[in-house]
Amino acid sequence: MSPLDMLIFLFFILVTIKAATSCIDHWRDIDEAAERAASRRVRPSPSVVRTARPVRTVRPSSVRVTPIKHINAPAASVRNTTIARQTPLKDKGVA
Image (cartoon, rainbow, N blue to C red; front, side, top):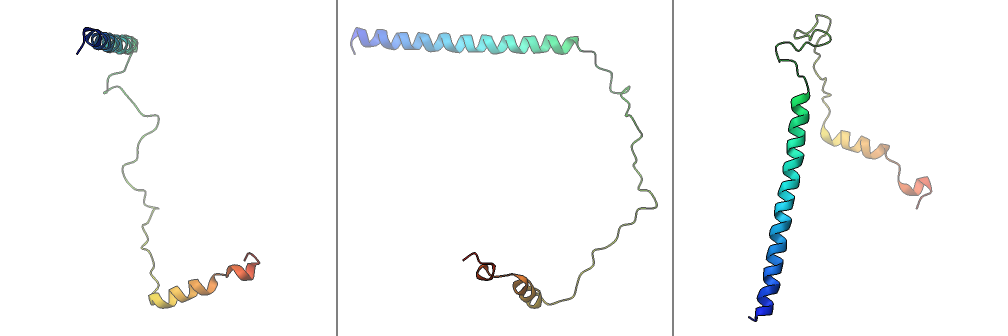
């Protein structure tokens, strides 16, 4: 390896180190600015926070849960009715 090659590699290593340190400094400055902005905000303590209206935890008596009604039809007949309801493309004038 010639001295010129070593100087070129040294240059790239130094440029990479400089870019990494400047990137770390940049993000550290942004984090510090965000911390300063967050510390200026006044936050109420969790025990003081109130909702605009009361939250219901009990279901009202007027609400009833109804079960899903199942139709006792065999799967083959259901399949045939869905196919019979479909219109082929030739009847629509598409193909």
